[in-house]
Length: 451
Image (cartoon, helix red, strand yellow):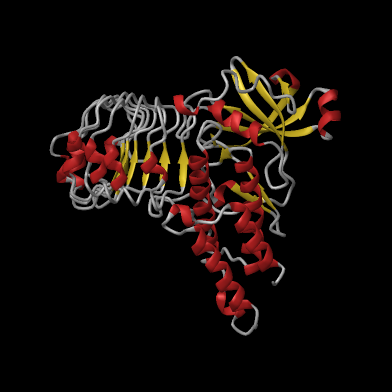
């Protein structure tokens, strides 16, 4: 992060990234002094409501973030920026998005938590669009023209007023991560937790919270201890992990929908086990088994450069058996979820934990959606979309397999090709031609057995 004082003193010449958080109410004109080099501009967490009409003078600008400001419309000045392709205006008061504000080269558009009721038909002109986050708005429909956005991979539509799931959306050839909970067409129960009999409903008075273990878009996870002897007896351990939801719209939707989907899914050996839930008026939460020592994240979240694909440490390496075992367990868990009529929406390596033996634990239901109100055709399409996500994961992991190590082995190259073929089947552009999770599990199981 830089300072306005540094900018005005001319100390930032030649920088490619600028981040200013100084309660700004006006765009500092001195930013234009960086026009020869500036590529990433982050003005989030200020008090801005306008951008200058000549913003296009920042000829190298590729990325702009202006979340948590006071914009009531998406600035038209953005549309005149020749190289701008990533735009993030989360948590403003945006009501209006016009065609003029949308650069044709846009790949990443984040408008989460605003007040948008309609989008322009020109959205269909954004043929390079890969990532679109619209959760927490007032949208009743999407433009039919968006059927032309055939490069869309990640779409967040939760917590809107959508009356139906567009048929064209489910047919997009590259759509891989979709969330739509919290819309009128997907509502299930008035109180989605009222009939949960298999998982105990507890309060914070039953728990002693310890250190923070992590934080995501929807909540904070703490290590905890039961104060209730009854819960220790019921769960078999005094130590637990507690996820407390933030109680607001996140990039993925409402916390209540995450809780509903998690509880609806139930138990599976490869899913982080939920042992209780917190449904107080002022706090929602999940109580989970504490993940055993030795587990770590399989991957890292996407970067600005990868946009929708996970990243990995440079020294990451997998064997073919590792990849096959991970894919088999995940296919099994996803088959279970879809049998319960729940989609995950975020099938990524960074949401998976593995130990040294590649035993897998999968979690984070922030982008999950209940499929109960969808038609059979729509549910099958949702499964096919998530099958593609599994294919992407296999592809990402195979990139870290040293294929040369198998050249001298008679079975190695064949298994590599077989796993690559399974990946290709999962990633077919024709949505209806993809296998279901049960079929993928069977194919990978046969490969693991050497059949």
